[in-house]
Image (cartoon, rainbow, N blue to C red; front, side, top):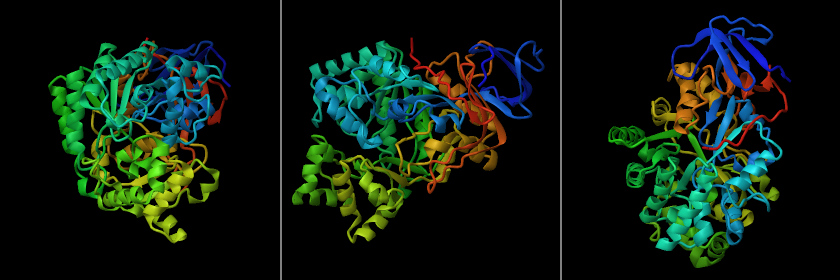
Length: 536
């Protein structure tokens, strides 16, 4: 483990984060900051690291992840370190582990658990400060930034009720959000396809956006539809930003389902027009043709009214189950007129089980719903019902639903920043994006496919997200910046696949956080210099 207070990285191909062409030079790190950058620096008493032609870049920033829980359980974060990631943004898509009141604690654990698996007692928190303390007690390897999940606010005030909030309830949510932002959270995330966030009306969303704007924080949105309603959903988000005065980040911009492929350019055009009109908005996206979510996304949102126990009761009732079957198999969902059946768009065969909460169900991981149904001698819908009942809604799915041309359009646009959208669980066959997004972007998309220069890919992973989240001391290789740095070779490669999704990346040799090596010459050091970053 490197302990010297001064390090000189000699003759690296410096990719400084601006998008400018790489240049060969030296970087001196003193303590936790970059002290000097130059063509040839005097080593003095510094420990010299010979780059030998490797690239040196700012540490990569994962702008969209669901790593809230895994940070508590696996603070060394090896799969992220091996990708060169030095900071991660959690609390996305309305999912988070705080804030809670006593009456909402179980609701919050169930909600988060539907996406990430079982949340145990003591793993959800009263507020951001309590979450921060829980992380910092054992230490964390890489930095964490947190958004406030809208669902937690709603569950604390309304529980699982499917209705608009009253004026008093809106103010209660606004006060709860204000408290988290005062404690240092970076903004608010909404998830307009995920109950209970999906049940918020415009008045509620605008009121919360106003609170975000008052703190000059960020409003991130999993918008209401990425299918046929993508353009109208982008327009809804832009109208919310305009009405509330907040800065925005549109989460994982994509067009899901073959009938809607080709819609991403029109969505980006909406964002560009909004920016010309003075709305500060950008977007994130991951470099894969498949998405991932909770199995509950295969059902219309109203199915979750009342929470998991109410859903299980509906599934146990013949009439309730038949109504849901019709919705999923035919698209008829009277209580959810804007909802589209994911199954009708992509097919049962393109839905694969990523992870389960119950160990007894491990044999279904990595298998498609058509395969599971055939092995059980039943229909795919009945297989879904069985999984929800046995796993209490905690099953994760992987959905093959995107077009590569749309993906290229998103990943190469100047407003884009890299976000893995990782859904880490203990075990299972998760989406490989948790283990490979960043090297895939540099190695596959930039180097192999030639979609964009490596320097521009690095910019999307460093300076752009640093600016978006107000990390003014990170994201560039410049004197005075915090020394979050990564050294990687020409052979940088993502090794995770959909069949073997937890294989670690190759080609990233050294990773520093605040001047301390997490990875040195390919070997983990075991230290935890990361911080829970706050806006203050």
